[in-house]
Image 1 (cartoon, rainbow, N blue to C red):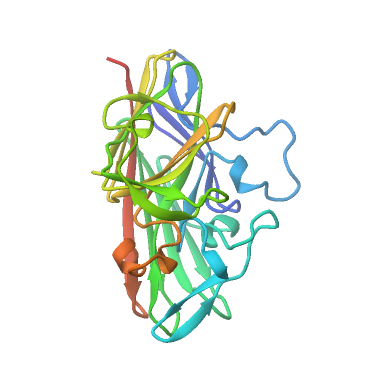
Image 2 (spheres, rainbow, N blue to C red):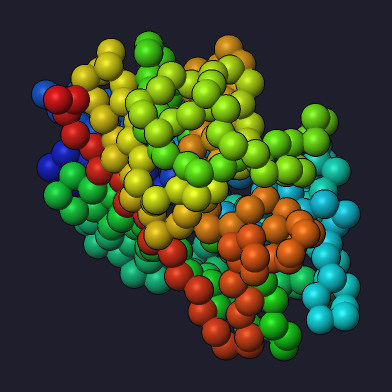
Length: 293
């Protein structure tokens, strides 16, 4: 389905994890990708790998959960492994489910998802996309429909074009060093100069790290296109993934640390919210395009 305003065009596939197929800025009759577009040259007979899409929701957690689960209130919560190429469960379950259209108009759509699991998370999710005055507003919420309290976390996983001298502005107070084998965080350190996006900075190859102490505001600049994308989120953490020699990168606004449930101090100390049965967590994100300068 397609949403459109005077300057933006959004294509959504509810059945593909509620994800975005493309998000474009319309200027002078041309469509300029603000997120990496999914290639529809050969339409898949089944849902494609979500990592080929432009963006998908992260619910009810972001990143990997080491050990396949976690302990809370003296009990063990087991989480199913959900990708053959990953040793641990990753990014929750919403990105791999078919969402339902609850309401829609020319500029706004609300999607819903009811998730149940024998062990782990049961929740009701609402994902809303809305276009207004050059801005894409995204609202994501989760309601705990299970019988027990559990830690929840939300975020988005956008993929952005990487071309020319693309730069990122996203000030953070700290970054987590990985274990050297996986993106799992092991130690919080000061932000190295090469990874410091407090000013507008180029993207280094090979980065896949979690940053915290963010003020919720960021900007991506594509000087070749004369275009900026301003990002606002009610979240204070993000992940930057820049695979070497590829034409995309990820800037993922999230409200919690990767593997927060297993880090020292516990899930709440690292940004997650414990929801009792019936309680709801909501996060909001916005993407506003503008001409550079």
